[in-house]
Length: 325
Image (cartoon, rainbow, N blue to C red; front, side, top):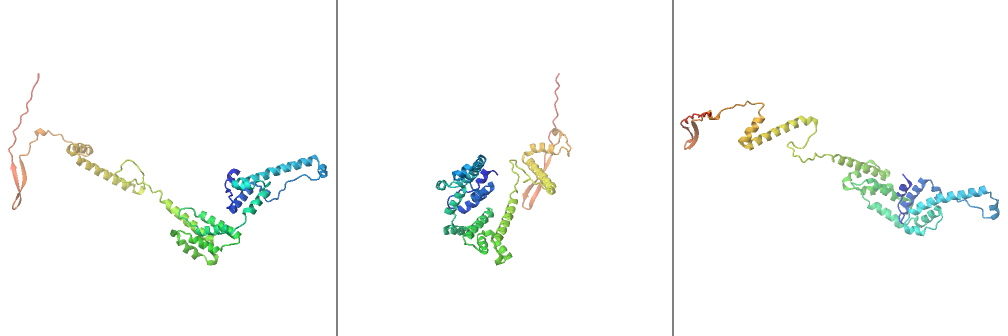
């Protein structure tokens, strides 16, 4: 990670967030290896004020002092600039006259580093009003709680660990209230700690995430083509039965279409469908003798009665042939 990206992790100091800003700023300056300038452990080398002592210095010594001053000004100036860039413009204007990072850091600490009752009360109120969400990462809630309790402890208002755990249990959503029994049942009162609640809540959140995530992939294939056999099923053990059901439904659909399209269409399709299993016979319809009798049913007082009606044979028609020469 570059220094510019790391510096962006330090919040802007606005006068009300000194505790958070000071921790982040210190961590960033330490990462650059220049924190000893802020502590005042490195001093800027100077020439003797007495002219006699100055004249006794050799040219090599004078050059070494000038080089040391240049190195100090460069590195301490880097730290000073890093601190100024993370200040609110109004605070920058009020502290722009400080010559070194050591003097600037101590000035900010003296003005804003004092713990006041209003700041501690705000941290305590945030702990009481905090709520654990079912969907959000619970680590954010516990990180803020640990930070608030640490600042209160530094101010001399330490909250007992048992009370910290109970405040966190009271912040649980209704769906996770069973964790109250789990945490209080597994720990004695003197051993109850905020970390116990944190472990139980994070474990529950991860379990819910896995459970909900496993049901998000049960989706059927979307297609604009209408299927007659339902949604596709790719299970091998059911492939044979599903294919057989699909063939049966397809065959039933063809039979229904045969009945709907009338005799002419039905004859044509029937011949095509059964061509491999049936025999075709060609007959002359004109040479067939029509039936001369037919039976009909007529209603009668005693029930239905059958009557047979006989018709005379039709006259035989002799074909006529013409010969063209």
